[in-house]
Image (tube, rainbow, N blue to C red; front, side, top):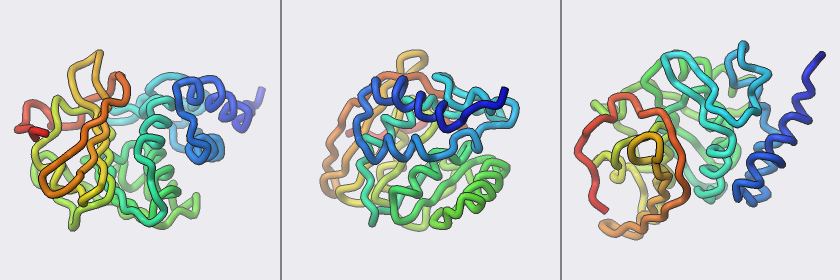
Length: 219
């Protein structure tokens, strides 16, 4: 029997994402209309809307839909803002960010993820994303700071160089700690030296590659 993806997407939003305190109408509408099934590996296509982290190549995973929803809501993205996404993965979150912001730079350590995501977004007629391949923990640097930085893999604590990539009044979304009880945080840069830290929710997320015990930033 052919799967009704539109109905499955609707059910995902109404039965998983909305009950997990995602109430932003713009985010809910985006997740209901964005074809998540096109971003999961073909063998998992029918599981695209399940409440689980779908496996990707290189031992990576897609975030659960509820985590994606909470992430997008927390950012409060404006149409004139720029975003740096650390960890392209499947490209689904990239596509969502691109539809909410002016421009997105997405970097991944695996060139396969970058090239496959670029192809998918081109098919979706999304053209405001620049893909780069590099290791953010061992030398890759953005050309400029961004209004929002989103880290899609967990870290033990915030690496000391990440906050420098955030513009004044910008935000940094990051998931910190040890499995199985990690903490999603939104860090807002108030000025050159001051930050506001907000604890969002607990989750468990695969570690960002090479983000072991690195020097961390003290807020």
